[in-house]
Image 1 (cartoon, rainbow, N blue to C red):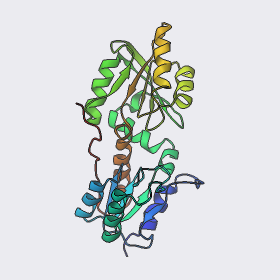
Image 2: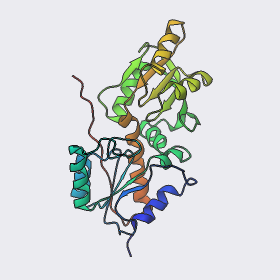
Image 3: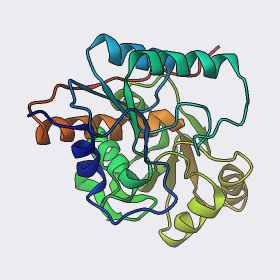
Image 4: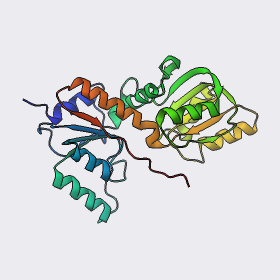
Length: 263
């Protein structure tokens, strides 16, 4: 008797209480299907789906949605790109389960845990918050942290606001879309952070707050990694966890190619 898709879904959602109005549902496929292989990826791109099929996976677990909307709603109507993607999914029979809300509610946040693990910053964790992790790292410069993060996450570039030679040791990390002012600024203030590292957020909010803080003589900086760059490590960590708990099921992590080019 093999492992069913529903058994894996139950495992992924069991660490927290049921989440209302969640996007974490089985988008394609049936929970009764016996799994032949699992692919895990941050984003279910067209190429990721094809890679999952090529390695024999019939279940793809993804963090973000397939159709360019957080709520997985097609607001574009009869769109050629969406129709072709739907055709690939339906004709192949691959099941797609989205794991977004639940993994962010793990204690600590599962995406954040994978990011901290990849950066090897576990010894410096001061506190895990629901939307951020507070670190107290040995004093270094913003440039030093930027170079280190790029190496560990294997990303080509980051963006920053502030003095790159400024010394920092109090750092807050906000994975994904948590760089907005309402989320990041109160934590920067409360925990007296030197540096906020986040995936993405409106450029007119936290970055402009940091610019004004600098103008007032305060030592504040920001590093912006990119959304996928800040969260993909969490999905890689998830793939490892699934493989450990379902050793009979081949489980593969499929990285997503960088979205933006540096020109």
